[in-house]
Image (tube, rainbow, N blue to C red; front, side, top):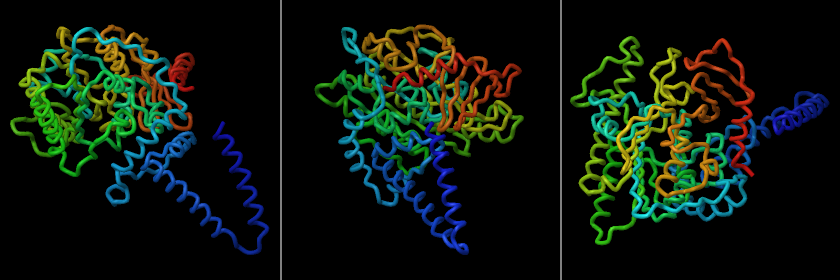
Length: 476
Protein backbone atom coordinates (compact mmCIF):
# COMPACT_ATOMS: atom_id res chain seq x y z
CA UNK A 1 0.00 0.00 0.00
CA UNK A 2 2.81 2.41 0.89
CA UNK A 3 4.55 1.57 -2.37
CA UNK A 4 1.43 2.21 -4.48
CA UNK A 5 0.74 5.52 -2.71
CA UNK A 6 4.36 6.62 -3.22
CA UNK A 7 4.23 5.63 -6.89
CA UNK A 8 1.01 7.60 -7.44
CA UNK A 9 2.46 10.65 -5.68
CA UNK A 10 5.66 10.49 -7.76
CA UNK A 11 3.62 10.16 -10.97
CA UNK A 12 1.62 13.30 -10.11
CA UNK A 13 4.78 15.16 -9.11
CA UNK A 14 6.49 14.16 -12.35
CA UNK A 15 3.51 15.37 -14.41
CA UNK A 16 3.41 18.69 -12.57
CA UNK A 17 7.14 19.28 -13.06
CA UNK A 18 6.94 18.35 -16.73
CA UNK A 19 4.14 20.87 -17.38
CA UNK A 20 6.01 23.52 -15.39
CA UNK A 21 9.22 23.01 -17.33
CA UNK A 22 7.39 22.85 -20.68
CA UNK A 23 5.82 26.24 -20.01
CA UNK A 24 9.14 27.96 -19.30
CA UNK A 25 11.10 29.65 -22.07
CA UNK A 26 14.32 27.98 -23.17
CA UNK A 27 15.84 25.22 -21.07
CA UNK A 28 15.83 26.92 -17.69
CA UNK A 29 14.90 25.07 -14.52
CA UNK A 30 16.53 21.71 -15.18
CA UNK A 31 19.73 22.38 -13.29
CA UNK A 32 18.07 23.80 -10.16
CA UNK A 33 15.70 20.85 -10.14
CA UNK A 34 18.56 18.37 -10.43
CA UNK A 35 20.42 20.19 -7.65
CA UNK A 36 17.32 20.10 -5.43
CA UNK A 37 16.78 16.38 -6.01
CA UNK A 38 20.45 15.67 -5.31
CA UNK A 39 20.28 17.72 -2.11
CA UNK A 40 17.20 15.75 -1.02
CA UNK A 41 18.98 12.45 -1.63
CA UNK A 42 22.14 13.54 0.17
CA UNK A 43 20.09 14.92 3.05
CA UNK A 44 18.04 11.75 3.52
CA UNK A 45 21.09 9.49 3.32
CA UNK A 46 23.10 11.74 5.61
CA UNK A 47 20.26 11.79 8.13
CA UNK A 48 20.12 7.99 8.12
CA UNK A 49 23.91 7.62 8.46
CA UNK A 50 23.79 9.87 11.53
CA UNK A 51 20.71 8.19 13.04
CA UNK A 52 22.13 4.71 12.49
CA UNK A 53 25.48 5.70 13.99
CA UNK A 54 23.99 7.13 17.18
CA UNK A 55 21.11 4.63 17.42
CA UNK A 56 18.31 7.16 16.98
CA UNK A 57 15.43 4.73 16.43
CA UNK A 58 12.66 7.16 15.26
CA UNK A 59 14.59 7.59 12.00
CA UNK A 60 15.85 4.01 11.56
CA UNK A 61 12.41 2.56 12.32
CA UNK A 62 10.83 4.78 9.67
CA UNK A 63 13.34 3.96 6.93
CA UNK A 64 12.83 0.26 7.63
CA UNK A 65 9.17 0.63 6.57
CA UNK A 66 9.94 2.07 3.13
CA UNK A 67 9.73 -0.54 0.36
CA UNK A 68 12.88 -1.13 -1.71
CA UNK A 69 14.80 1.52 0.26
CA UNK A 70 18.34 0.57 1.29
CA UNK A 71 19.95 3.48 3.12
CA UNK A 72 23.66 3.98 3.70
CA UNK A 73 25.50 3.02 6.89
CA UNK A 74 28.80 4.42 8.11
CA UNK A 75 29.45 3.66 11.79
CA UNK A 76 32.88 2.16 11.31
CA UNK A 77 33.97 4.85 8.86
CA UNK A 78 32.86 7.64 11.20
CA UNK A 79 34.67 5.99 14.12
CA UNK A 80 37.90 5.62 12.12
CA UNK A 81 37.71 9.29 11.10
CA UNK A 82 37.35 10.27 14.74
CA UNK A 83 33.92 11.81 14.21
CA UNK A 84 32.14 9.30 16.44
CA UNK A 85 32.86 8.44 20.08
CA UNK A 86 31.49 4.90 20.26
CA UNK A 87 31.44 4.75 24.06
CA UNK A 88 29.48 7.99 24.42
CA UNK A 89 27.07 6.84 21.72
CA UNK A 90 26.58 3.52 23.54
CA UNK A 91 25.79 5.33 26.79
CA UNK A 92 23.28 7.59 25.04
CA UNK A 93 21.62 4.58 23.42
CA UNK A 94 21.20 2.95 26.81
CA UNK A 95 19.44 6.06 28.13
CA UNK A 96 17.03 6.01 25.18
CA UNK A 97 16.48 2.27 25.15
CA UNK A 98 13.63 2.14 27.66
CA UNK A 99 11.48 4.72 25.90
CA UNK A 100 12.27 3.20 22.50
CA UNK A 101 11.03 -0.20 23.61
CA UNK A 102 7.83 1.25 25.01
CA UNK A 103 7.03 3.01 21.75
CA UNK A 104 7.88 0.07 19.49
CA UNK A 105 5.57 -2.21 17.57
CA UNK A 106 6.93 -5.44 19.04
CA UNK A 107 4.93 -7.69 21.34
CA UNK A 108 7.75 -9.83 22.65
CA UNK A 109 7.46 -12.09 24.51
CA UNK A 110 3.75 -12.76 24.20
CA UNK A 111 3.57 -13.51 27.93
CA UNK A 112 6.05 -12.96 30.80
CA UNK A 113 8.39 -15.89 31.30
CA UNK A 114 7.52 -18.20 34.18
CA UNK A 115 10.82 -19.76 35.20
CA UNK A 116 11.78 -21.73 38.29
CA UNK A 117 15.28 -23.10 37.97
CA UNK A 118 15.73 -26.70 39.18
CA UNK A 119 16.91 -27.15 42.76
CA UNK A 120 20.67 -27.00 43.12
CA UNK A 121 23.20 -24.91 41.29
CA UNK A 122 22.53 -24.18 37.63
CA UNK A 123 25.50 -24.95 35.39
CA UNK A 124 27.80 -22.41 33.85
CA UNK A 125 27.40 -21.90 30.11
CA UNK A 126 30.33 -21.62 27.71
CA UNK A 127 29.09 -20.81 24.20
CA UNK A 128 31.77 -21.04 21.50
CA UNK A 129 30.74 -19.70 18.09
CA UNK A 130 32.96 -20.44 15.08
CA UNK A 131 32.06 -18.43 12.01
CA UNK A 132 31.02 -20.49 8.93
CA UNK A 133 32.07 -23.85 10.40
CA UNK A 134 30.60 -26.59 8.21
CA UNK A 135 29.77 -29.79 10.10
CA UNK A 136 31.63 -31.88 7.54
CA UNK A 137 34.77 -29.77 7.99
CA UNK A 138 35.33 -31.37 11.40
CA UNK A 139 37.67 -34.36 11.26
CA UNK A 140 40.42 -35.86 13.48
CA UNK A 141 43.21 -34.56 11.21
CA UNK A 142 42.37 -30.90 10.62
CA UNK A 143 40.34 -30.30 13.81
CA UNK A 144 41.18 -32.94 16.43
CA UNK A 145 39.82 -30.94 19.40
CA UNK A 146 36.47 -30.37 17.72
CA UNK A 147 36.26 -33.99 16.55
CA UNK A 148 36.95 -35.30 20.05
CA UNK A 149 34.37 -32.93 21.53
CA UNK A 150 31.79 -34.04 18.95
CA UNK A 151 32.40 -37.74 19.56
CA UNK A 152 32.05 -37.50 23.35
CA UNK A 153 29.01 -35.23 23.68
CA UNK A 154 25.67 -34.47 22.09
CA UNK A 155 26.03 -34.04 18.32
CA UNK A 156 23.13 -32.70 16.26
CA UNK A 157 24.01 -34.12 12.87
CA UNK A 158 21.21 -32.51 10.86
CA UNK A 159 21.27 -28.97 12.20
CA UNK A 160 20.35 -25.89 10.16
CA UNK A 161 20.82 -22.16 10.59
CA UNK A 162 18.06 -19.58 10.38
CA UNK A 163 20.17 -17.55 7.94
CA UNK A 164 22.95 -17.79 5.38
CA UNK A 165 24.67 -14.71 6.85
CA UNK A 166 26.29 -14.05 10.22
CA UNK A 167 23.75 -11.39 11.14
CA UNK A 168 20.72 -13.61 10.58
CA UNK A 169 22.41 -16.76 11.84
CA UNK A 170 23.13 -15.17 15.21
CA UNK A 171 19.70 -13.59 15.34
CA UNK A 172 17.98 -16.94 14.82
CA UNK A 173 20.06 -18.77 17.44
CA UNK A 174 19.58 -16.20 20.22
CA UNK A 175 16.01 -15.09 19.49
CA UNK A 176 14.57 -18.22 17.88
CA UNK A 177 12.76 -15.96 15.40
CA UNK A 178 12.84 -15.47 11.60
CA UNK A 179 15.16 -12.90 10.12
CA UNK A 180 12.16 -10.81 9.08
CA UNK A 181 12.00 -9.56 12.69
CA UNK A 182 15.63 -8.44 12.77
CA UNK A 183 15.07 -4.83 11.72
CA UNK A 184 12.40 -4.28 14.37
CA UNK A 185 14.61 -5.61 17.17
CA UNK A 186 17.57 -3.63 15.85
CA UNK A 187 15.56 -0.41 15.70
CA UNK A 188 14.49 -0.57 19.35
CA UNK A 189 17.67 -2.36 20.54
CA UNK A 190 15.77 -5.16 22.23
CA UNK A 191 17.87 -8.07 23.57
CA UNK A 192 16.49 -11.63 23.49
CA UNK A 193 14.61 -13.02 26.48
CA UNK A 194 17.30 -15.72 26.65
CA UNK A 195 20.00 -13.21 27.56
CA UNK A 196 17.64 -11.35 29.87
CA UNK A 197 16.96 -14.57 31.76
CA UNK A 198 20.68 -15.27 32.13
CA UNK A 199 21.10 -11.86 33.72
CA UNK A 200 17.98 -12.23 35.86
CA UNK A 201 19.25 -15.55 37.19
CA UNK A 202 22.47 -13.86 38.36
CA UNK A 203 24.84 -15.17 35.70
CA UNK A 204 28.11 -13.29 35.29
CA UNK A 205 28.52 -12.32 31.63
CA UNK A 206 31.85 -12.66 29.82
CA UNK A 207 32.19 -12.13 26.08
CA UNK A 208 34.95 -11.76 23.51
CA UNK A 209 34.68 -11.54 19.73
CA UNK A 210 37.30 -11.69 16.99
CA UNK A 211 35.04 -9.65 14.69
CA UNK A 212 33.74 -7.19 17.25
CA UNK A 213 30.03 -6.64 17.82
CA UNK A 214 29.16 -4.15 15.11
CA UNK A 215 28.86 -4.71 11.37
CA UNK A 216 28.09 -7.18 9.88
CA UNK A 217 26.39 -8.92 12.83
CA UNK A 218 25.31 -5.74 14.69
CA UNK A 219 24.84 -7.75 17.87
CA UNK A 220 25.77 -4.69 19.91
CA UNK A 221 22.24 -3.43 19.19
CA UNK A 222 20.43 -6.76 19.25
CA UNK A 223 21.77 -9.75 21.21
CA UNK A 224 24.00 -7.74 23.56
CA UNK A 225 22.03 -4.48 23.58
CA UNK A 226 22.53 -2.82 26.94
CA UNK A 227 25.73 -4.74 27.78
CA UNK A 228 28.51 -2.28 28.64
CA UNK A 229 32.18 -2.62 27.68
CA UNK A 230 31.81 -4.34 24.29
CA UNK A 231 35.10 -3.95 22.44
CA UNK A 232 35.13 -2.88 18.78
CA UNK A 233 36.87 -5.03 16.19
CA UNK A 234 40.65 -4.56 16.25
CA UNK A 235 42.86 -3.95 13.21
CA UNK A 236 45.13 -6.89 14.02
CA UNK A 237 45.59 -9.76 11.53
CA UNK A 238 43.02 -12.53 11.69
CA UNK A 239 45.24 -15.01 13.53
CA UNK A 240 46.02 -12.53 16.29
CA UNK A 241 42.36 -11.52 16.68
CA UNK A 242 41.38 -15.13 17.26
CA UNK A 243 44.23 -15.66 19.69
CA UNK A 244 43.07 -12.58 21.58
CA UNK A 245 39.67 -14.20 22.16
CA UNK A 246 41.40 -17.11 23.89
CA UNK A 247 43.64 -14.75 25.84
CA UNK A 248 40.59 -12.82 27.06
CA UNK A 249 39.00 -16.07 28.24
CA UNK A 250 42.14 -17.31 30.02
CA UNK A 251 42.65 -13.97 31.75
CA UNK A 252 39.00 -13.75 32.80
CA UNK A 253 38.87 -17.33 34.05
CA UNK A 254 42.11 -16.93 35.99
CA UNK A 255 40.76 -13.77 37.64
CA UNK A 256 37.54 -15.52 38.54
CA UNK A 257 39.29 -18.51 40.07
CA UNK A 258 41.61 -16.28 42.10
CA UNK A 259 38.72 -14.63 43.94
CA UNK A 260 38.28 -15.77 47.53
CA UNK A 261 34.52 -16.12 47.23
CA UNK A 262 33.64 -17.49 43.83
CA UNK A 263 30.79 -15.53 42.20
CA UNK A 264 27.65 -17.13 40.77
CA UNK A 265 27.47 -19.08 37.53
CA UNK A 266 28.82 -17.52 34.36
CA UNK A 267 27.71 -17.19 30.76
CA UNK A 268 30.73 -16.87 28.47
CA UNK A 269 30.41 -16.20 24.74
CA UNK A 270 33.53 -16.63 22.59
CA UNK A 271 33.27 -15.71 18.91
CA UNK A 272 36.00 -17.01 16.56
CA UNK A 273 36.46 -16.11 12.91
CA UNK A 274 38.74 -18.64 11.12
CA UNK A 275 41.34 -16.68 9.13
CA UNK A 276 41.71 -17.69 5.48
CA UNK A 277 45.46 -17.97 4.98
CA UNK A 278 47.39 -19.15 1.93
CA UNK A 279 50.09 -20.86 3.96
CA UNK A 280 49.68 -24.49 4.95
CA UNK A 281 49.13 -24.97 8.67
CA UNK A 282 52.06 -26.69 10.42
CA UNK A 283 51.57 -30.45 10.36
CA UNK A 284 48.42 -30.24 8.26
CA UNK A 285 48.77 -31.75 4.80
CA UNK A 286 46.27 -31.32 1.97
CA UNK A 287 43.31 -33.68 1.64
CA UNK A 288 41.47 -34.97 -1.43
CA UNK A 289 38.42 -32.71 -1.49
CA UNK A 290 37.50 -30.62 -4.54
CA UNK A 291 40.40 -31.82 -6.69
CA UNK A 292 38.24 -31.54 -9.83
CA UNK A 293 37.59 -27.82 -9.24
CA UNK A 294 40.72 -25.70 -8.96
CA UNK A 295 39.03 -22.59 -7.57
CA UNK A 296 37.05 -24.57 -5.00
CA UNK A 297 40.17 -26.56 -4.11
CA UNK A 298 42.24 -23.44 -3.42
CA UNK A 299 39.53 -21.89 -1.25
CA UNK A 300 38.88 -25.14 0.60
CA UNK A 301 42.54 -25.50 1.60
CA UNK A 302 42.63 -21.93 2.92
CA UNK A 303 39.36 -22.49 4.79
CA UNK A 304 40.69 -25.79 6.21
CA UNK A 305 43.85 -24.06 7.45
CA UNK A 306 41.71 -21.45 9.21
CA UNK A 307 39.57 -24.09 10.90
CA UNK A 308 42.75 -25.88 12.00
CA UNK A 309 44.05 -22.68 13.57
CA UNK A 310 40.81 -22.07 15.49
CA UNK A 311 40.69 -25.72 16.56
CA UNK A 312 43.94 -25.12 18.47
CA UNK A 313 42.37 -22.15 20.25
CA UNK A 314 39.29 -24.19 21.19
CA UNK A 315 41.59 -26.85 22.62
CA UNK A 316 43.20 -24.22 24.88
CA UNK A 317 39.78 -22.94 25.99
CA UNK A 318 38.55 -26.41 26.92
CA UNK A 319 41.83 -27.32 28.63
CA UNK A 320 41.60 -24.22 30.85
CA UNK A 321 38.03 -25.13 31.79
CA UNK A 322 39.15 -28.61 32.78
CA UNK A 323 42.17 -27.32 34.72
CA UNK A 324 39.86 -25.06 36.71
CA UNK A 325 37.75 -28.08 37.68
CA UNK A 326 34.67 -26.66 35.95
CA UNK A 327 34.19 -29.23 33.21
CA UNK A 328 31.41 -31.12 35.02
CA UNK A 329 29.66 -27.91 36.07
CA UNK A 330 29.55 -26.24 32.66
CA UNK A 331 27.29 -26.64 29.65
CA UNK A 332 29.62 -26.20 26.68
CA UNK A 333 28.14 -25.48 23.24
CA UNK A 334 30.09 -25.17 20.00
CA UNK A 335 28.06 -23.71 17.15
CA UNK A 336 28.46 -21.99 13.81
CA UNK A 337 26.34 -19.13 12.53
CA UNK A 338 25.88 -20.66 9.06
CA UNK A 339 27.61 -22.90 6.55
CA UNK A 340 30.03 -22.25 3.70
CA UNK A 341 29.94 -23.30 0.06
CA UNK A 342 32.66 -24.29 -2.40
CA UNK A 343 30.52 -24.58 -5.54
CA UNK A 344 28.99 -27.75 -4.10
CA UNK A 345 25.79 -27.16 -6.08
CA UNK A 346 27.69 -26.72 -9.34
CA UNK A 347 26.14 -23.29 -9.91
CA UNK A 348 29.19 -21.11 -9.20
CA UNK A 349 28.33 -20.18 -5.60
CA UNK A 350 31.21 -19.64 -3.15
CA UNK A 351 31.13 -18.53 0.47
CA UNK A 352 27.80 -17.66 2.04
CA UNK A 353 24.88 -15.17 1.91
CA UNK A 354 24.23 -16.01 -1.75
CA UNK A 355 21.66 -18.82 -1.70
CA UNK A 356 19.51 -20.92 0.64
CA UNK A 357 20.84 -24.32 -0.32
CA UNK A 358 21.95 -26.85 2.27
CA UNK A 359 25.65 -26.05 2.03
CA UNK A 360 25.16 -22.46 3.20
CA UNK A 361 22.42 -23.26 5.74
CA UNK A 362 23.78 -26.44 7.36
CA UNK A 363 25.40 -25.39 10.65
CA UNK A 364 27.37 -27.01 13.45
CA UNK A 365 25.88 -27.77 16.86
CA UNK A 366 27.88 -29.72 19.45
CA UNK A 367 27.16 -29.89 23.18
CA UNK A 368 28.52 -31.25 26.44
CA UNK A 369 25.49 -30.95 28.71
CA UNK A 370 26.26 -32.12 32.29
CA UNK A 371 24.27 -35.23 33.11
CA UNK A 372 23.28 -36.04 29.52
CA UNK A 373 24.85 -39.06 27.79
CA UNK A 374 26.85 -38.79 24.58
CA UNK A 375 24.59 -39.28 21.59
CA UNK A 376 24.18 -38.45 17.92
CA UNK A 377 20.81 -36.83 17.12
CA UNK A 378 19.71 -37.35 13.52
CA UNK A 379 16.39 -35.44 13.46
CA UNK A 380 16.21 -32.06 11.73
CA UNK A 381 17.01 -29.27 14.19
CA UNK A 382 17.51 -25.54 13.73
CA UNK A 383 19.03 -22.51 15.44
CA UNK A 384 15.49 -21.44 16.34
CA UNK A 385 15.39 -24.39 18.79
CA UNK A 386 18.21 -23.10 21.01
CA UNK A 387 16.28 -20.52 23.13
CA UNK A 388 13.54 -23.01 24.08
CA UNK A 389 16.11 -25.71 24.86
CA UNK A 390 18.13 -23.48 27.18
CA UNK A 391 15.21 -21.72 28.85
CA UNK A 392 13.49 -25.01 29.62
CA UNK A 393 16.57 -27.08 30.39
CA UNK A 394 18.49 -24.55 32.48
CA UNK A 395 15.83 -22.40 34.08
CA UNK A 396 12.73 -24.58 34.09
CA UNK A 397 10.68 -22.07 32.10
CA UNK A 398 7.15 -23.44 31.67
CA UNK A 399 5.95 -21.10 28.94
CA UNK A 400 5.23 -22.77 25.62
CA UNK A 401 8.10 -21.92 23.26
CA UNK A 402 5.56 -20.16 21.01
CA UNK A 403 5.50 -17.34 23.59
CA UNK A 404 8.98 -16.23 22.55
CA UNK A 405 10.21 -18.19 19.50
CA UNK A 406 9.32 -20.43 16.57
CA UNK A 407 11.50 -23.30 17.79
CA UNK A 408 11.08 -26.25 20.13
CA UNK A 409 13.27 -28.16 22.57
CA UNK A 410 16.13 -29.86 20.74
CA UNK A 411 15.80 -32.97 22.87
CA UNK A 412 12.13 -33.53 21.96
CA UNK A 413 13.33 -35.45 18.92
CA UNK A 414 10.84 -33.77 16.55
CA UNK A 415 12.08 -32.71 13.10
CA UNK A 416 11.03 -29.40 11.64
CA UNK A 417 8.76 -29.57 8.59
CA UNK A 418 9.91 -26.15 7.37
CA UNK A 419 11.90 -23.19 8.63
CA UNK A 420 12.26 -19.57 7.61
CA UNK A 421 15.85 -18.70 6.72
CA UNK A 422 17.01 -15.19 5.90
CA UNK A 423 19.80 -13.18 4.37
CA UNK A 424 20.41 -9.44 4.34
CA UNK A 425 17.50 -8.55 2.04
CA UNK A 426 15.67 -11.75 1.11
CA UNK A 427 14.42 -14.87 2.86
CA UNK A 428 13.21 -18.36 2.07
CA UNK A 429 10.81 -21.00 3.37
CA UNK A 430 12.97 -24.11 3.48
CA UNK A 431 11.40 -27.54 3.39
CA UNK A 432 13.30 -30.84 3.21
CA UNK A 433 12.35 -31.25 -0.45
CA UNK A 434 12.05 -27.71 -1.78
CA UNK A 435 12.84 -24.06 -1.15
CA UNK A 436 10.59 -21.04 -1.72
CA UNK A 437 12.75 -17.93 -2.09
CA UNK A 438 11.24 -14.45 -1.74
CA UNK A 439 13.19 -11.52 -3.16
CA UNK A 440 12.64 -7.80 -2.40
CA UNK A 441 9.71 -6.51 -4.40
CA UNK A 442 7.66 -9.68 -4.07
CA UNK A 443 9.39 -11.92 -6.63
CA UNK A 444 9.10 -15.56 -5.53
CA UNK A 445 10.86 -18.65 -6.83
CA UNK A 446 10.40 -22.34 -6.09
CA UNK A 447 13.55 -24.49 -6.17
CA UNK A 448 14.47 -28.06 -5.39
CA UNK A 449 17.21 -29.26 -2.98
CA UNK A 450 19.71 -28.98 -5.87
CA UNK A 451 18.69 -25.29 -6.19
CA UNK A 452 17.17 -25.84 -9.63
CA UNK A 453 13.48 -25.45 -10.54
CA UNK A 454 11.65 -28.75 -10.02
CA UNK A 455 9.02 -30.12 -12.37
CA UNK A 456 6.20 -29.23 -9.95
CA UNK A 457 7.37 -25.70 -9.14
CA UNK A 458 4.14 -24.50 -7.52
CA UNK A 459 3.73 -22.17 -4.57
CA UNK A 460 2.13 -23.73 -1.50
CA UNK A 461 -0.54 -21.21 -0.50
CA UNK A 462 -1.20 -22.85 2.86
CA UNK A 463 2.46 -22.85 3.83
CA UNK A 464 2.85 -19.22 2.75
CA UNK A 465 -0.15 -18.24 4.87
CA UNK A 466 1.27 -20.09 7.88
CA UNK A 467 4.70 -18.50 7.47
CA UNK A 468 3.16 -15.02 7.19
CA UNK A 469 1.25 -15.63 10.41
CA UNK A 470 4.53 -16.54 12.14
CA UNK A 471 6.15 -13.40 10.75
CA UNK A 472 3.35 -11.32 12.27
CA UNK A 473 2.97 -13.13 15.59
CA UNK A 474 5.23 -10.89 17.66
CA UNK A 475 3.84 -7.55 16.46
CA UNK A 476 1.10 -5.61 18.19
